[in-house]
Image (cartoon, rainbow, N blue to C red; front, side, top):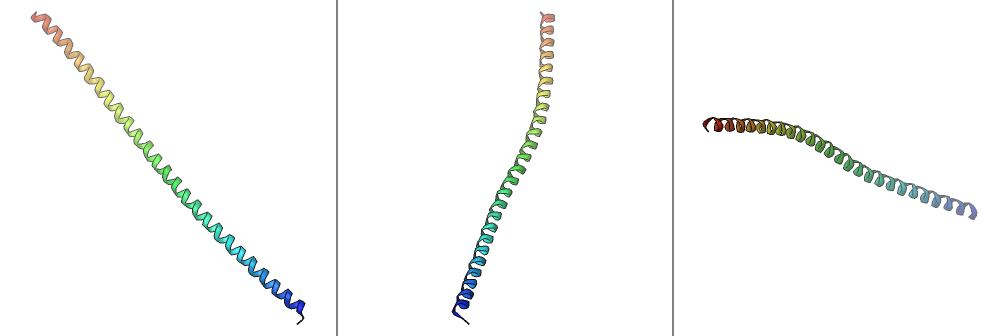
Length: 94
């Protein structure tokens, strides 16, 4: 083998090693980035699930508040009615 062929062969081998090394490094970096993005997506999905749960809780609380408001109104009306009756009785005893 001539010296030029040996140099060409060595250059080709070193180039291949460098190329494959670069490909493996790029692949590892891509995999790392994908894993980090997956973590972010999981966090985002968790926030979405919590938000949905909070919205449901708020809806339930609004329904409960409507019930309490209605009961308060009924009680207020009863008190006013009783107050009128007391006034009438006081006038009758008068």
